[in-house]
Length: 168
Image (cartoon, rainbow, N blue to C red; front, side, top):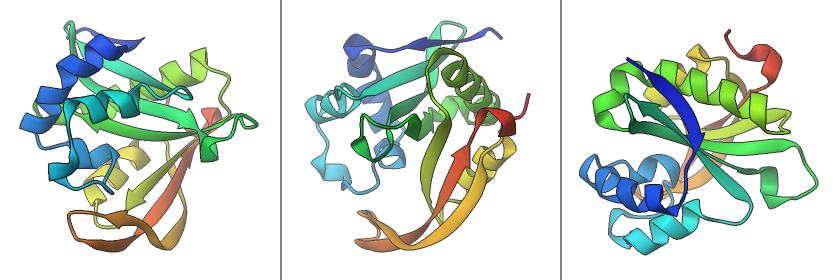
């Protein structure tokens, strides 16, 4: 199995959208939006935001997952990046390795001192996976964000990874 990382573009996003819908994964990156809110144009627009980059992990030439990276707090005056990660269902068994590879890629190619994620407390699978690749829990935040599928605000974990903490 050959895994490589590369920066994705709008053509990739258009190709990924039907897979995101089929795998019912749109909520994994943007839980604040209900399933019926989504269109391909909205998906591509969010991933194409000016202050963000999307790094895909290709498995044998097919995008198996991706990391969406944008500046923390939307500020240009930071080296911290917020992230959302997603693996397509077919690649769930190798999601930790894909995540580890994409985090290494980001730290080796971007001027980024820290990666920060927000994980709803009920998403234990994602939390365990991120911890297995070097993210650490910083704190639990009450009502961290709106979760459309539950139609309420939910608590969440603030997690971080720095180059020294990632598993090598």
